[in-house]
Length: 224
Image 1 (cartoon, rainbow, N blue to C red):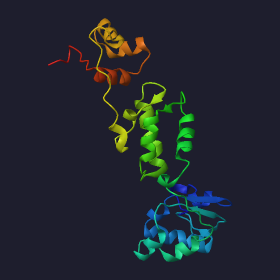
Image 2 (tube, rainbow, N blue to C red; image 1 turned 135 degrees about the vertical axis):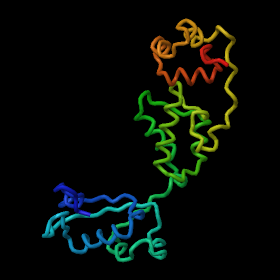
Image 3 (cartoon, helix red, strand yellow; image 1 turned 90 degrees about the horizontal axis):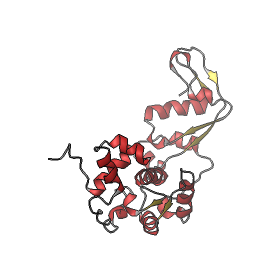
Image 4 (spheres, rainbow, N blue to C red; image 1 turned 180 degrees about the horizontal axis):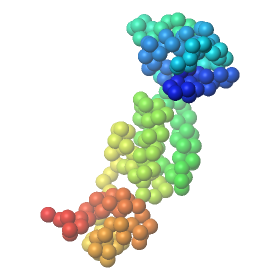
């Protein structure tokens, strides 16, 4: 709880006079629950190596995605700690039940470089997903899509495999004939040196490799 090795101030002591936020308290081990209950009940903490307790004045805000009452019935969460934490209670609906999901996605994308936008199909796929991981999963999905998208628009094929509709769009158009694609021309001009081509075209190496795979381009040095 408030103890820390080598004289460092523990988290409870750091929160003295303020608020201590405990995320996912439903995953806290029973031994840690016992120590937390003691701190909340006695309003004091004994630092590691100290002999005298130190009084602390803290307010606790706890969050969890679990049903704490069910955990109490299963013997995995202390009922006395649950009662001690009981106060103002706010229940946030999961993403799949929120009507403002499109607005939330728009805000998350607006804060990214280039302010990428979703195609209609990609937006529909995200709206249909059940989001078992809630906001963390959504942020991760957008990170994935933004890294994969090659322009300011995010399509269905840019969505992660965890989004079921992420692979349902029509196949991409066939690769252009040999010699018609600027990337292939640059690769041939640079003797298939990906680093040099990336510099010439102002792209990342990963983007060059991804486009090579999409166009079916293989360096003669690695063929066969």
